[in-house]
Length: 398
Image 1 (cartoon, rainbow, N blue to C red):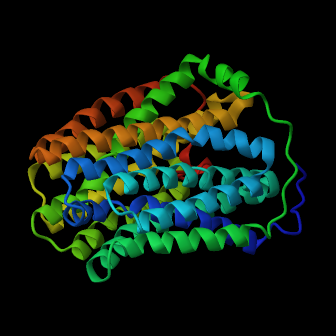
Image 2 (image 1 turned 60 degrees about the horizontal axis):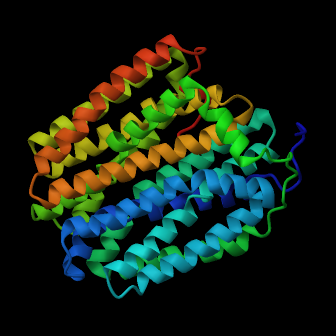
Image 3 (image 1 turned 90 degrees about the horizontal axis):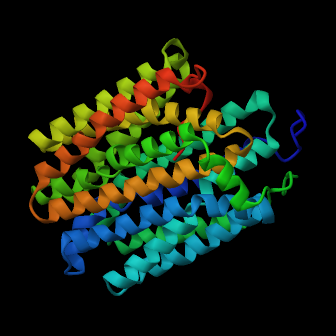
């Protein structure tokens, strides 16, 4: 790629891609405050409704590598437009779903479709933005995701309480449809010939260190992402309003943004192992608190602590996978996202099963039990293997 910025690669282009990442983050976060509401409205058990979130996260993770291959072969803009059009239809389907099964199907399709948004946008920036400007553009993209995540819980909670949960998905449908049209104004960047999917997969998975990082990513998804969806639910089950529960949990997204800025600014002063340890300790403190008490203040603090763990640990592991991927970096990053959200789905399933059975404390102790060995193995392994790469070089990507 030339070091000259293409004419269309400017602030408007980045803002469009940022709006795409915002919409994806908002849609993914919106399910958290809706679980209890959906269970009551659809007359279903909490664990069955939790399957809606589990299926979404699983589809979101499994389709990462597939969409990456599609964008290599058919183009970045076409891929983003196709995925957003599917997402719009899926959100509309969720808005009019008459029962749990139809809602489950619609949300699974939405997760599969939104899986293309952030990876395709990141690759588009990599294809079109000069290296000296790329970090800022990627940071803007990930800020959009973080803001969407923070706004998603509040937005969904307020809409569900004062209007109806179906309007949450109506908004998602409108936003995705609008972006489908707007993204069409972006030029299709030139791209190198794509490597065969199977060959790239075999090359990436043949390295032991890459397999280790992918295993850590799955554990991270379980511990750092899988149980966040139940923070509002525990408050709602305790009598808190839907809007209050959503607002408190939004501290997670705010913390991600704040600590993301701190890691980007000061992260180079610390070793990757130190950043991983700090993130793991923050997660452990989160689940220690949640296992002991769950009132509004405790969940607020826990949400902020869990939000801090993501820039500290996740961005460091993500940087590591980009180094281990070699020539097949895109495939390695796609598989990293796949294992991350597979772990997310597994955590949501385990947490939902335990909480539905009345074992709320046990659910958060399970997350604690995974976060401790995850931190130890990740920190020690990162210290022993690979060059010292700081989290400053890679923004948080979800």
